[in-house]
Image (cartoon, rainbow, N blue to C red; front, side, top):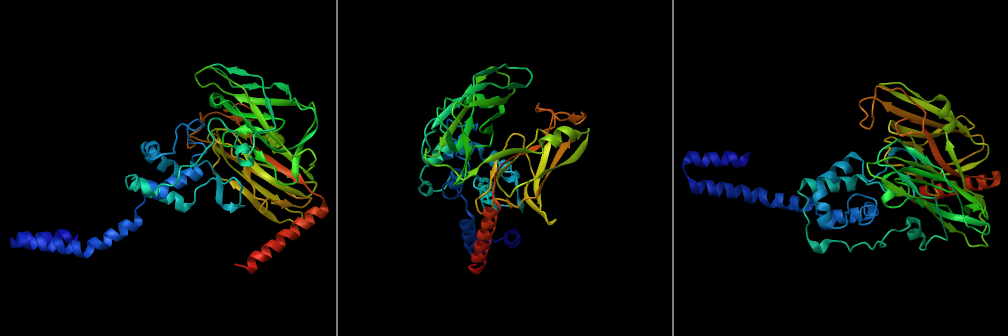
Length: 434
């Protein structure tokens, strides 16, 4: 505004020299300050963005992995800059749909971006997505070549046992299919499982909605399970492994099979606690689920805990009309606590939220788990194929359902009391050392 005023005065006076001096004066007063602010605010790929992508995105967005594009170099990232900004600001990427303000916030596998990281990416794109000084680039992250086991990378070794389903060929067009083969494990002695991961073939990931087995589940966004110390599952000698794989057509005939990778404890190790799994809410949903046209519904399920329980992980499961799901604890004394709230469920991603050891819900016997599921059967749900249809419980993607995959261990009363006291001591230590 001041520049324009000064310029007009110069023209009215007919003094070109005066205009130049006045404009120069404005630059002298405002220019250095603006330059300093611009320098402080400058965000570049090399200095600020590359490290975020390495930490949060490259696990999937690199050559040979399941993401549709690699994001490991500036040349790979630059064409996608505006799309990245859109997905990041909307909270669609990285896939993490847990509320940031409600319930437990400590997870082993949290890949979400901080508010500061989101702001950095947005400002970088708004500034034109500059590379910056190549000398500021972090060293390239060394990823294993080819198809790798993610759990194996974390444990530093390959699986001890591989079990594969028999192949299935999904036609280019047609109804959803469920392939349920039963195969031999090939195990000749009882062994305790420390970790497990399930994966389809790379090409087959296009047609696999999810795949359950007696040992673990594959779903997009679920990278396997590593059980906490002194916990595990027993795989018996000659035990058969059953699969339940949900396939859908994608316009091309594709053949796929699932492979389970299993990592064992040493033979002389017997974990103290057995890891258990529950599809919490599934039976109530089968009996009561009802979703009329043009409505948003809320359904509840209640699951009693007969023994002291430590919950290890929580994974909501719904279909295309799924909106949100909460997990609450109603304690024997009547107190109610919100444990976790997935407020933006996305059918394309089935994330398993794994609690840290010091934050995992520790619940006394007699606690009632309350599961609440919201579904959106309105035109406002962009994933909804037809808001005019009544929807009931069913396994097809266009039907719907709800339950929560929950991994947990049951404790003795003595062990529960010890863990409660341990957490209280830890809390006092933190409060005394702010």
